[in-house]
Image 1 (spheres, rainbow, N blue to C red):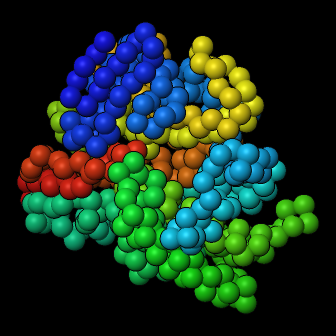
Image 2 (cartoon, rainbow, N blue to C red):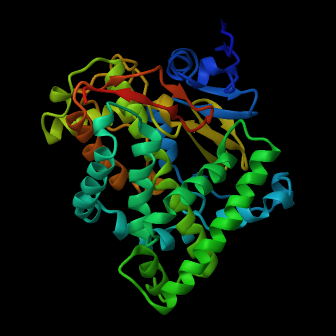
Length: 416
């Protein structure tokens, strides 16, 4: 029996008590994940009343397993599942989520993903390299001479939201508003949420949807060379996206297209600085840069948990699951499985032991992964190149936003 202030593990019953609100946990979840992997990588989480899977092979397999899905109300009613009716105070959020790529299963998921996938393939997003570099350099120009900066607000938040907005067809000047809507919207995904968080998310969903609706109307009349115009005017097997599908898809692309990357830029810079590694070595070539980025993603994933419904009774790692059960797949813990990664808590940029699961796997593999990877591979070397002697100016502050993981502030200084 393990007994810590925020974690209790009973490996015999495979029951775990884990307090995700404990700062000791959310500031650095990796030691807890290591303890779980060592004692019971599949466990029943008492607070959530759900089974959780952490082992790399198990998580990787479940992400691809058709016996599990992100959606279940297409094959069963709320009454059959004992599921509560939607809350009136989150009706706008629920409407925005109804057709999101993250929640749908085939054939609806296939139709939507086919229409947007071509915009996010690597060969397409790589054409954005000059734009990303120009934006990143312009932002750094704005603070390089100061010798100090709070990196998230002056850089990490701006690059991803600007680039995904441009791809979709939303003006740069909407960036600050998109960030605010997104921060409020994703509050619904957090384990800490309360009624005020839910009302803020619903308000953001309503305003977000109203704005997207006006842009859709403009693009119907005057299409442009952007993703939204493509989604509006392209058919798939004789069908066009409905307005509700367009709104849900646009919102999820805007949120997923920047939220995780903002966190990852900050945590990657922190990891590199705290480990005292030489950026000239880390970013000496495209290959070493890619390895460094992947190691940052492995060791500090921006999204920690992915939930799925059990669509048919089955057994996983000795756990009997019934139809309708919700399970949690801890991507961030799977990345630390010692059966997959040697000395997994250590930051080793030269590591070459296989793919991390930070972007998921299977049909719900993150559609924005090529864009996120491109942005990270470009801006991380640039920051260390442009800001010589870069170091932490204060202890980084971690956000209380589990199951996302990111920083509240990252104060840096260098030789101006």
